[in-house]
Length: 229
Image: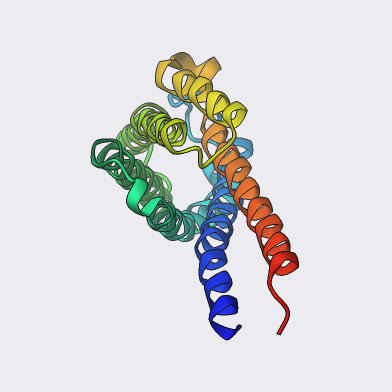
């Protein structure tokens, strides 16, 4: 009986860990992106007037990103562990590579933005005159809203392809992920990119909640069917 209980706990541990990590990543990144979106103008060529008033909100948002990245790494590792023998090397490589590239670009954009804020605190009067603000603003915008979003779309597409082959997520959730992935990879212009970064963490939140719910139902059914002592 003890062996059966240990087996049930071992099966439940991995999906629950993936769900918790995915939820943490989603909530942290959504909070960060919303803070930035309401503090920083959508146009990357703005004059930087927000630096004197809203820089604290942006600094808080940037400080949340490393923790979101740690949770995302944990999420990827646990999802791969969940696939186990069903893992396809080709799609698994794309899954892992696109996820790591997304994180690298997210961190790079945050580092550039953080550098601009730090320079503003040190030399507020010369930042705009030297062109440092404009350069840093445009670079961080391009990294996040072009390259990082494309890698997020590739990650979603590879995850959905793996799901189609293994059935780890419902079909409707998989097809929704494919549609959103195509949107991220093809989105162009400031209008479509204004809130586009939120698509990725919201989708991760959706599948994480699904994993958590399925794990809860599996535990309940296994407890009901477990033989008495």
